[in-house]
Image (cartoon, rainbow, N blue to C red):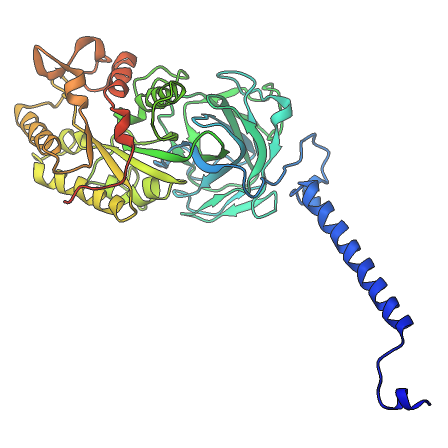
Length: 454
């Protein structure tokens, strides 16, 4: 042995070259594998593809190519009557919703809030509808949804689940089809009863059918689905509207998207095209017919939960919310068996505003519209409405005010709706009345943050 090796000198140059060559080969191999995984875009589990049904594989959304905003949402209201035992086992539920904002990727939220047992969804899909008011999908847009990388998901009683994002081009103003299939009984179906939109049901698993052939049953409800978010290049945030039947649009034309929130979104979009300095926001509707500021409905969890009870869930927790609009209070007057205290209603509204301000959110609030002529109206109730409106107009409740009362009341009898704005029940507007509500909005009020000191 030479002295150099005996003293622990390093390996020969030949050995060095061999090690370096091996490391380079390893790095190149790992890089190739990583590149293949990233560019494949396929997040559908292999076992989910082992069936014979035709489908398009879901694709992971890009990490950053826009802003996530709410494109549509609806509040869970209660458990659907008639589903207490079997739920909708063995049927495909195809919800039809209207995209307020367009995007290049999408994700959904499913709710089992009123379920009394686990809801097992084994198959879910999203697609752009082939047209208006149809269960047929544009074939090239059909995507299988996954939840944590798996095709199936179990939603616990009282819980909800957010899907993985999938790449799909959702045009603004398009109808979107979200379909779920549950093979097993799940108890009461969490639903929104006054959708003002026809959705569809099929017997068996037809989740990824692009045709409408199997969807022979129509329904006026939205089931399980409570939100559609999109990755948008056109919207930078979400306006959330919390309200009652006047926001739910209970007397608007079915399938026409004539709720006042739809018209508000249309106005905002048109103004932006005209170059006005306004925020690029989508608008989502969290109206529940019969909703009150203070009182819950019956049941546990309470159906038709009060505005105070559901504010965090339905408003503050919506995707990328920037502004909250509140139109609540009429039902606290109309549905109360005793004459309500206007100060309690106002304090309830102020509580909502304080919670929004704690998140840095601006709150725009509406005056309460007249309802003389509706069954149950009394002069004493009218006095309460006027007292609540006086505090709202005085700036003691919200950051900004939209005066629905002034816009829709009869100028010759301000206790009533103007006749052409009245749907006929003297409480809910006609389509023209809903449009007038949206036109009463000063779009500039959607700018800024919460400022009012309460």
